[in-house]
Image 1 (spheres, one colour):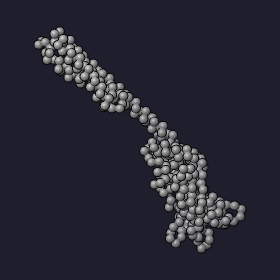
Image 2: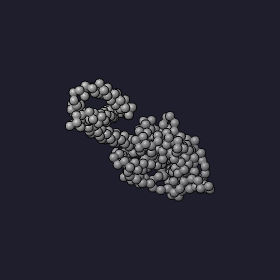
Image 3: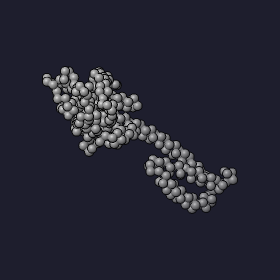
Image 4: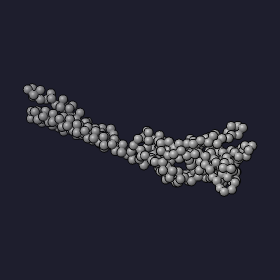
Length: 313
């Protein structure tokens, strides 16, 4: 069927069949017929024209969701596979409303018209919430921000709306109307991302949580290994000081005892303060305090060695 446009070349192209890629669905005509026994009211604002446009809109939204799901899964292969039947069920949950319809143009034969109106798609707020959760996992903006950037109105009732151009044709001996949305708007793009991220939200969030848990486990294992090493090095440093202290002559130990006790108190206080200021992580604070003590023990061993008897020095 041949498309139509006004003299300014504004509205609509040829009818075509569109494939819902990635979902294994059969080809579905993009022009939707609404027919009855008698001739229909060929008016942009008629119930038949609105029903035909909404039916076509559902097909376009379904296609957009399918393509977005495919794209998301290509980058995130662990995301759940969301079949075509499930996409259709989701699209059917959306509420579609066409208002403020006006006629823009009519051909000389009177069987083609270009129309304009406001198409609104209202969804359950929970769908928006889940879509936001899925988008957050991938560090994407919110659905509200996406809508604003796409010049789509989005209100507190989870209603997405935008002015839309569409065309209608008389078909089947004037007993039916076919309708096709134009391409000069972004409402279906937003609805496509909304549906896709809502559909994959649970698996994206789950995969992110699994990834976080793996990272935390790896960090825990790394921290444990670092702590084990720090404790081993500290034991060796402490032992070195103890061996030197034990090897000192009794009179030397007696002379150094007061200073040794003062050094221990200062070392403990300094390392405690240094470790507390070094990090907000409890594990890092413990590790840093042990390492600080080890450094101090090594320095103290070097300080005590000159007091050893000549044969020990």
